[in-house]
Image 1 (cartoon, rainbow, N blue to C red):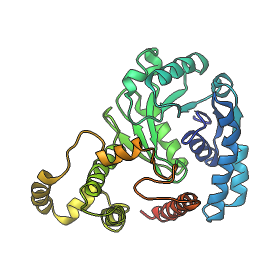
Image 2: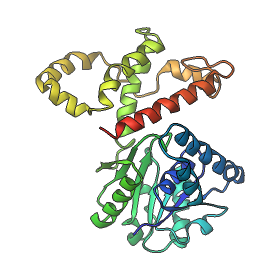
Image 3: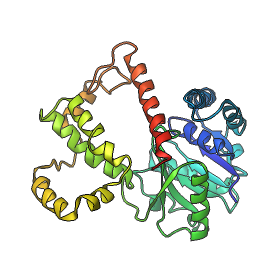
Image 4: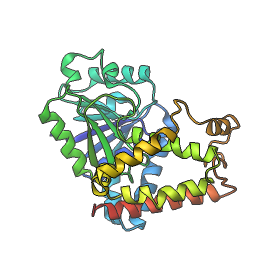
Length: 313
């Protein structure tokens, strides 16, 4: 039974993953090799939990219980020696992740399940140097940012793991209020990011071609397809609309869609100019002064409202 969880990497994803599991009652060790990250992680976790309390999603007692379930560790050895489940959220670099898994194999008990938060690197390559017995307890567990507000967790089901072990992990995610998605083949991007970037490619292309301004493209998505797909999946929508209608529509539209195999040149130019979006004050939109922080807060507020409503989906 999984009781003790270790999260390696306390950055953007790791600290959020840690307090999601801790809120579900698991004992969580959070570690990072970068000392300043370990210093800021408890502050960020408490801020995010307090935000959830202020928005009425959890109560104040849950904030304190969650924080009490988290231990900050200065070393991987200290954090993972008694772990039942370890998930890494370190740099998206194959060599770094392979080295970490090799280190964990020497530290952790034989029953420990290893998980990687990657969506772009291949699991088979990542675990290739591990003993066969350990490979049978390794998986991808891909979360979306912000981890504590987006319900999805993509879980690899590539055939290397027994059904019993997989089900235990699956049940753990359900207990943590995640909506697990099973991924049966080791494809780049898993499922959610492939869908996301297929849509993003067309959205960026439409802006680049002047078909609509950024706000027009975003509103078309927010109040059109994304509004409907928030409650009803794409395949369900197709069934409801009639597959004959979809076949006819796709035969007409597909030839006109962007099929580039590279990021759009307009976005690449923005990056080259140092305009990276909210964190630099300009991207497709501009965020002067405190507007970036306000936009981020408003984004989180919309997400937590969606999270509340999603309980009824």
